[in-house]
Image (cartoon, rainbow, N blue to C red; front, side, top):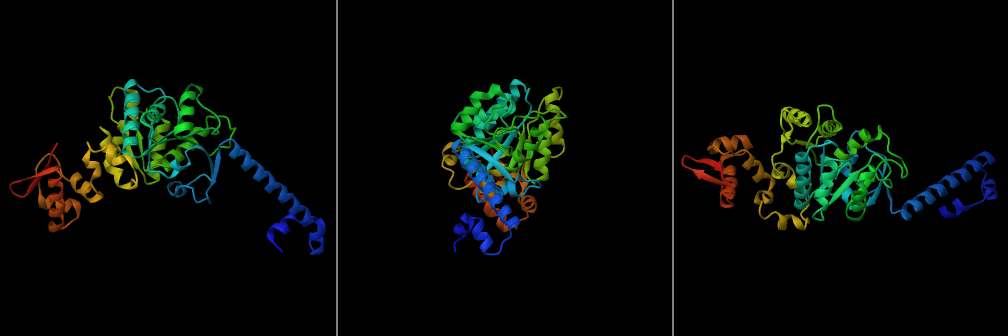
Length: 339
């Protein structure tokens, strides 16, 4: 007898095979639960919402390995974004014009490089980062502190619609869940967990963005921060992060050179958009050796030691970098970066 026929059987059948009435009642009740779940799943599909559980193949590996991964989350828009190499951009809601401009530019440039930009669709830095990515038709995903069918804040209705059409929306909260203050810190672990690294653009000393940065660090992800005016309260958090070891961001290349080797080869627009930034086309080893050089002449043996490579190995890499125009060789087997 098939599983389906057993599932569809009535009380008389269960009685005939020796199942007592109490257990039969539980079986029939569980069928109702399954039917309710199936109906709920179908209603989500009708709304354009995809439910992803931690057991599904589509559940992103990067998120699965964090300490407290969501057992289930809901998606609207482009479902592929959760598994695309991503970088989070976060920061103050009440940001400065400078901060907004930087977040917008980083979102644009990281998108052009082939990364998806992850943020939280809040006003300020989040909004600027999403818009920067969307401005050139690139990938961006918003992680919400409410249901994916609810636009919050309402001022970002146009952005919400753009994310539906050309990006993605994700939440661990059930559709229909209204925004609550405690839900926003909860979603921060997902923003950092989906991402290879987190960039903090502006943040006060006590800021939710710093929570996201610390979560990223705990998740063994890269942390970046944009330096700012020492007298600006919104730069105190980012300056402290840099003091604590976050990588300082003065241009988008500071981020990309750390993570570019994690981009998939099939990224169509990467090479086309970055022919003016050839460092992005170096392999991981070449980037590592290049990072061990400076604008001051460095002896070959010093580069070999820093790179943990033999003299013979390092000479090969340095020759490649010289041919590609990144460095030049000086008398005495010394090397220096070129502009």
